[in-house]
Image (cartoon, rainbow, N blue to C red; front, side, top):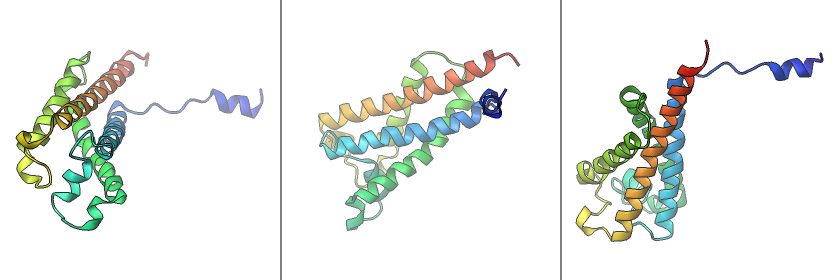
Length: 163
């Protein structure tokens, strides 16, 4: 057997479920906040990731730039690692879409209601348009379901493998 065939037979060492969960958190934060930035660009939403991360704290020209959106997306990805860690610790054993859906609603409520006074660039709930309501709720629910399904799947797959 050639060295190339032997090399192909080698498998990568399995990554722990926790490490995969942290990766899932970062990827989901980047993915869904990018879609949030796109929805802001196309005027489906009045807020973008940069509205929360930068515009609420600094009123300068660069916070409305493309660079600010990119940096905000990366920061949201890093913050999502914390959300996925919480999901991993509390709900990794749960199956189905409901735990993830509830996670999305909880994160949405935390951002738009509990933390809204901190974000001066984000209008209050009563001042937002219906397009922003629908877009934001849907993005947060999809974010939560993505994290929930992915972490639960990895947990159950890891525990079903013969050791």
